[in-house]
Image (cartoon, rainbow, N blue to C red):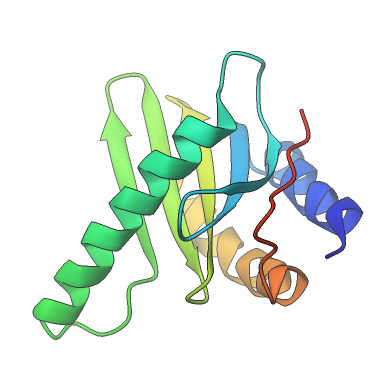
Amino acid sequence: MDFDALAAELRNLRDNIAGVTDTVIAAVDGIPIIADAAADIDPGKVSALAAANLGIARQAAEMTGKGTLNQTVVFSSDGYMAVYAVGRMALLVIMGDKNLNVGRLLFECRPIIERIGLLVAPVAVSGHERR
């Protein structure tokens, strides 16, 4: 797995989309692969929470017959957490402040997720974090 390329994708997200504050790529079982996050963000906890969020949302999409799940977005009083499915084996978490343009984020993420999907296939079980 090319961790330098993954780190570059995460940096580009933060640099190119206003309001993005932290990012994590994890396996769908909640094990972090790599993170570009502030010191007060625990990639392990974020990954576990995002995996649970994605799993529930994926089941809801399947049970309602609405197709394959792409993403979930949590809207909070002070910001956002978006969780994107990266194939069936990984996920991307993007956290942002109140100024995050969620519409732009949704639009910009498709090609990024495709590139990350190519980089994480197959997902490493051991994980790797970068702060």
